[in-house]
Every structure is written in structure tokens, then in C-alpha cells.
Length: 299
Ligand SMILES: C[C@](O)(C(=O)O)[C@H](CC(=O)O)C(=O)O
Ligand SMILES: [Mg+2]
Image (cartoon, rainbow, N blue to C red; front, side):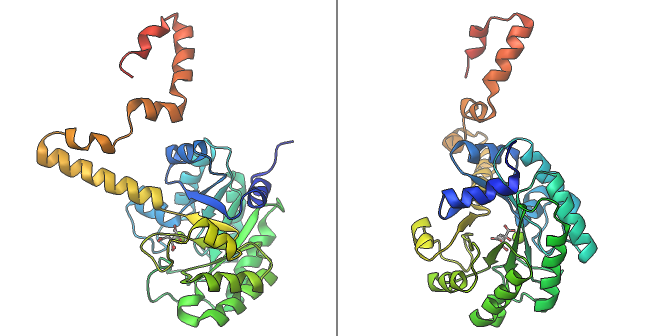
């Protein structure tokens, strides 16, 4: 029997410390990340909002919006996928529905956070929190709804910024008591704080190494030494793609040609490699009795 996605995710955390989790904005990005050796993928809430819907990351996208992107990714990769479900998309019944749909879509793990429904990016000011008990209820609703016990429910706390370390650790303890399998302390500013979270709760800790935020770009080795179990790069490739795309658009407009930015581009051959394009074409050629050699032209 093949391993469930949740089990794969849990195994990956044992194999690699910290487990590097690659943000993949779409199916093709997921394929590239898998083929360069990542053992787990991430679908970012901000990524879904920004890239797929052109919206800010302020709790505007819905369960269905996220599911659409999930299905595209899980249909092309064997890697376990961690998904950002923001605050769960509603009350207890809706959270239960979210977890059921995640399992059906082949997701391995989700993180659910303790901000109010009108959530903000974790690295922005003025985040508002729900009461600890309300978040514990969110976690319980999620845990009760899973039918595969290996499916991972990760609790994210955004409390550090507004309530300080001690209060955030207290929340973390309660979230683990409520059944959270892993912990995501958001917007952590130094390694010592990770250490303290890790010591306080005996579950894997995730470090969100998102760029241009509150967390320095700690290396995997630094995080390992601080007792961190997972290192997340939610939007790194997306930010790079956007910068490259913008440069290409501007250059074509200004120069009337893309010649100057060709070096920013993936070649046709590279694009095809990750898609296993030539295997498809080979089958097509056999089907139509074509001479394969002709197709290698112009690669
Ligand atoms: C991890 C995160 O929740 C996301 O949606 O990717 C964001 C990332 C970011 O905005 O840089 C976050 O709130 O940290
Ligand atoms: Mg998010």
C-alpha cells in the first residue's frame, strides 16, 4: 500500500532536518521544485490570492479558490503538500469541511492561524488575534474532522508581534494540547525565540523564511541548531518570477525586442525537460509513424 500524503510529510521531517518546504505557485513550479530535490511543497495563501486572483493577502480568497490551485499541484507531483488555510474559512462546521476537502484533494498538511477572520499577512503590523480558546476550538474542529490520522494539522500563532514571547508560547502550549501536530510561530525575529518555542512544545516547529519580512534569512544549519523542524520558503520563487517577468515586459516595451533579457529566460529545452515533453512526443511519433529525428530540430 502506498503511503498517505500525511505520512509522507511526517517521514520527510525525519529524513531531513529542517525539512525544506518549497513554495510552489502553480503545477509547473511544483514539478521544478520536485525535480531539483525538495521533499515537500507548500501552497501559500498569499500566493493563491496574489498570483491566481490578483488580490492582496487579506482573507479574501475562499476554500474553493485554494482547492482549485491545490488540485492542479497534487495531480502532477508525488511530494507531500502543506497548504495555508488562513483561519479555516469560517466557523467550526466550515473548518471541518475545509479539512475534509483538503484530504480529498490529496493534501498532506495544513496550517490554521489564530488571527481574526479579517486576517493580514503575518509580517505586517496591526494583526488582531482571536482568544486562545477560540483558536483551540478551531484546532479541535480540524482534528475531529480528519479521517486519516496521519493528516497533519499545524497551528500557526501570530501572537508574538502583539502579545510578546511568553504569551505566544503559552498559546502554543494550549494549541498543542488541543491537538495540533506541529507549530508555526509567525514573524519570529531571532533564533533564540525558535529555541524557546521548540523547548516549550514537543512538536516540530516551522520557521517561515519569507523575504522582506520580520524574520532574517536564517540558513538551514542555523535553524537546525535552534531545534527547528521545517524551513518554509513560501514565495521565494514567485518573487523571482515576478521580477523577471516585469523586466521582460518593460524591455519589450522599451526596446521593441526581448533580446536583452533572453538570459533571464528558461529555454524551450529546459521548459520541456521538466514536463517530460519528449516522452509525450515520442509516443505521438510512434502513433503517427513519424521519424523522431526530425523532431529534435530547433530544440
Ligand atoms: C506564509 C504566508 O502566510 C503565505 O501566505 O505564504 C505569508 C508569507 C508572506 O506574506 O511573506 C505570511 O503571512 O507570512
Ligand atoms: Mg498566508
